Image (cartoon, rainbow, N blue to C red; front, side, top):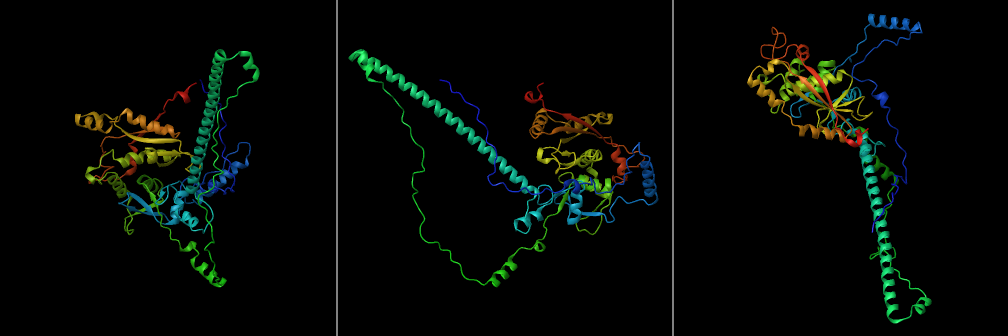
Length: 454
């Protein structure tokens, strides 16, 4: 006997006690500046308005005579931490500037935005509201609860339908058995006319009630409540409340901003707005020395200056980071999705990342195939399996991101007249050194019949 199911409407998420939604911050105003530098563009040219030409000329001459500074008067500061392999920014104002103007860094006690102080104020009842992490956690809990309720409703509908079909089938079977027994008895012992005229036999299946509301509870609490209130003067209560009431000034911010090596070097070398100091905070690290330090600490354990090569992990990652930052993307670490970087159009607060980037070195120059030893070394570094790329691509497909493989062309170790490297191997001219690298982008998409079928 077949069992048929009817499509049941899915339950909707209806909040019996809807709470007023908190006003979202004006992110367009907070993150209006894409980088921690100021730009002074010329006014827009309107062809049918001759006054726009005068405005453009006046703005150009005024900026030419008194050139405005694009950098802040006091450069941002951070110090190098060898233990965490990052740059720590402890000043709260500097941390807010770096986060709001380009989404640089990560809070040491937060998932992304440094918001530990706000969470602590909300937890102690000083400030009423919710941080972005709390909103995200609440949405995940509501989504999980909705899915559980939907699965429960679907399961109950299926069980109810099965019970109904089973009850109908049992009634039909019992009716058929009773009729056959009755006909056999009529044929053997009695006349058919006399029994058929007396009436019909009704057969019904017993129904068991599962309603347990009539069952009395086994234990009932009775007696008096042992809650007694002592008469305390109001002055004493107010004084105790003032002493124990949390204060925002008493909370010390225990969070700092952590910058990756790529972010710190882009701010220090690419933009020139960050000064990196040593761990003691007494001496500023020069850009050339910072470049060598980041290259050394990209290995574990840190490599010496003589062991550095042209395809150091820091060089490859910084070339790709600088490449996409120059194109206007907001580049964030992508370790959460098993990739090197995530590319955001405007930032994490506006939308999800559109692309996930994996960095791979490429050795197309003939120098890397000149000897058998170099060929074996290149083959070892480029060894990747299709299983690996398939797994990574599947992860990005599940989170609705497009996988981008960034191939970095590694140049041969040639120095024209000692203009790039010094005698001890340290890079003298970073711009000329990085200019020899090239980036090629390859987009890989996973073909799925359900989504790609025409």
